[in-house]
Length: 185
Image 1: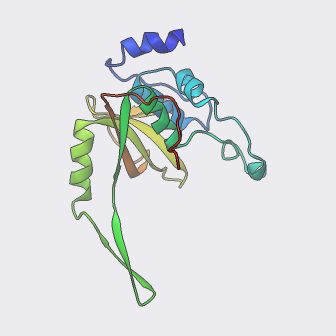
Image 2: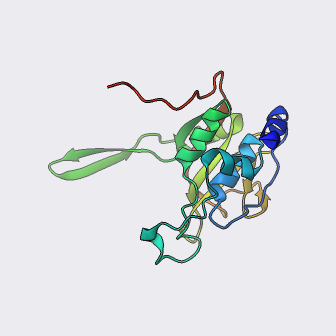
Image 3: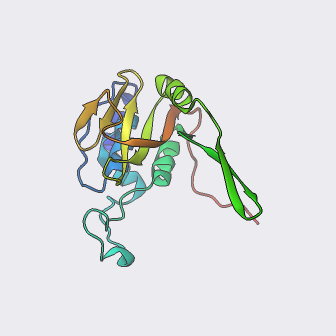
């Protein structure tokens, strides 16, 4: 917990590249980079390091058999540390049902310009797929206009590393998440 307090004091510093400690920890490591905390803080606040192998996944190869961390767990950590998270979907489509046949159209014709606008103004997490089709997450720094890939690469070029599906804007909030509560039914 001492490390957490130390890093919260310098959270406004520049983003640093952190190499993921495990092959299954790209989400946790990307959140750590954007929040400017050690990956161990993400593990501490989520209560696990992602290494668990669910019984249903034992047949899968490494690292796909590991639990890893979900974006939702990262959002919980952000709220605990006083940050909010907003998803910006790259190519959103509206789909309607017409005589049992789905019909779709792109919601934003200028998806690249819209995404670029958010990326120029906010740090965040980019989720999508690698060129080999595997799901991946990287950190984005607006100040350097670079991705910080947890495999150990910083780059101005996004496309060869990840095909963007969602840009998760992370910004300082004016309130922290309080203790866990449930709505009274």
